[in-house]
Length: 288
Image (cartoon, rainbow, N blue to C red; front, side, top):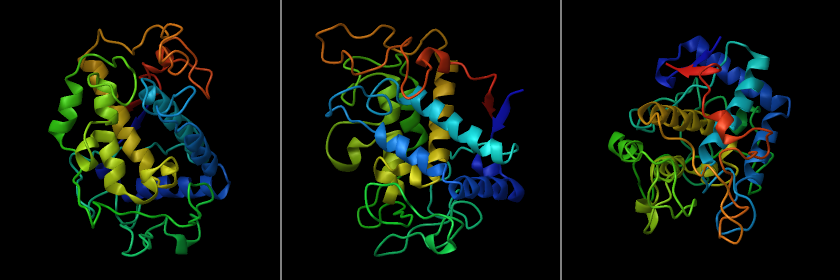
């Protein structure tokens, strides 16, 4: 039977506690750091050579859907009642709203080094030392809203701008695609600074700290953020029922994107699964 992913704002005190405890246990076992390593490895930009699967590519959405499922399966092996909640950042928009409570993810980083000092994932608590990352820092950092150069979280109208595009993705299938739902939701725009970060990307920028790079998985909010991104993909699928993942065929030999992106029926590394097989997950989970 399918299980339910809930809005973080509806979690009971017991549900918050069980989710946090499962994450901490996964970290204690050393399994959580493997998720960080995988995301770093597959954080490939379209300025680099080789295959892109996790970002700046059509497979951004199915890749993170499978990644979320892997994390959720690991958590449920520890506590079968746990599912990943989603953070609707169009509604919970302040640095004091959920999920930033002391009994869930903790709050903002302190001024200066941006270290998170409150909540279960604070370094001083002893259960959340960063071991995989792009810097040598061992503690979780955040800069909610970017104090020195403020930005705001995406709005419902920002999301609707992406949702109403009926094409899943378009050529050139990368960060420069001006049309298509995938890039409008992933959020690679034109221009400089804040105006160039849309939806998913803007949320990473708003949280700041370790959420800014390939090691963003070090902040547990990564999963709540991507659960909401996945929910938006599910809603897009319901709205545009005749539209599928694109491209449906690999780019032709000799073209710029040949061997660089995953077509609908091709395997999606690092898993033995295709985007086509990840388009329908209603038998596994649903959203409340």
